[in-house]
Amino acid sequence: MRPSLISAALVAALVGYGSTIALVLAAAAALGATPGQTASWVLAICISKAVGSAWLSWRTKIPVVLAWSTPGAALIAATKGISMAEGAGAFIVAGLLIALTGALRPLGRAVALIPDGIAAGMLAGVMLPFCLKLPLAVQTAPLVTLPAIAAFLLVRLRNPAVAVLAALTAGLATAFLSGAAQLPPLSLPLPRLTFLVPEFDPGTLIGLALPLYLVTMASQNLPGFATLRAAGYEPPVRAGLATTGILSALTGFFGAHTVSMAAITAAICLGDDVHPDRSRRWQVGLAYAGFWLTLGLLSPLLLAIIAALPAPLIAAIVALALLAPFAGAATSAFTGTETRFAAAVTLATTASGTAVLGIGAAFWGLLAGIVVHALGKLNR
Image (cartoon, rainbow, N blue to C red; front, side, top):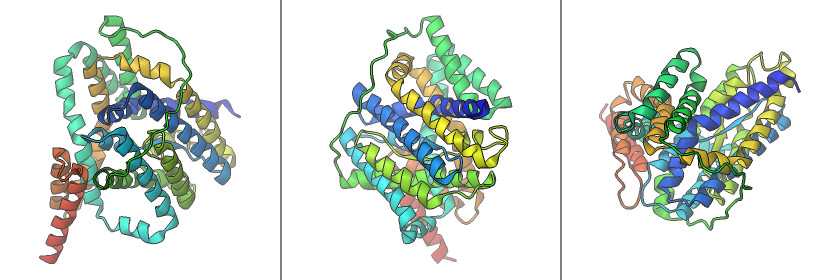
């Protein structure tokens, strides 16, 4: 295996982990996960990404790499009043819906009927509250947040893909060197999967599982397939959806949310510099899988270090990680004139975080946008 394959896989894995691990931890905290359940969540999803990337790359001879659903983690982090058992039930159902989308064409066509602007409005509404926490984080702890923001802005000028990783690195260094955080004991306990008995609460399935499925499809799987197509590969749509859906359903029993096709990290693994022979570039998926398995095994140590960081710094890292996705979602939401007002209604309703009848705001935002859009079409 060429060194370029290994280096590309290493960079992609570190970017994927370091850029959004804080958001995954925020999602676990929102569901009231114990430290053991949080560690199980991270280990299970790392194993899922490793297995799926290796299998799809080897089976299709295409460099396919997977990611965890970043907007999905933001959606989970914005939920209130849901237990880990109910969350696990939602993760399992969302995974099954993804797998069924690849197997049943009518389901895929039904999802496609939702206007892109409204779907983007829901996604933007999920991420907006986290982005708005950045100024408060700076006000609360300027000494640790400002160096992270400076690193993010400077690195982003040259390489946006690693900007959040640079911010996390700068934040870690500043927090520990300044005494704002104390380094935990550097032991290396073996990680362990924790089985959860899922609860399939109807309100949670409507308010979390359905939006999680939709944002994963719209903001991760579809861009991931487009990234492969742009690199000159025919994406394995049905195999990709079946694999990620089944893996997500299985790991849901261990508290992990959905995995999906990667887009940003995939781009790191698809260039000519990875391997000049396109027919052998698929091997990067095997190296990528190896690094994700390693990150999963190191998760108790890595999570202990991140958990020691001040809360404002974690909030700032999460906000920085979501700024670019929020900008993209907001742009998509307000591009089309026909759906612009409906998208605004969707965004505002979702961002409010208001739950009704035990169903989360993301569902009500999506429903409100669809109703407003339908009324507008009837009036034409």
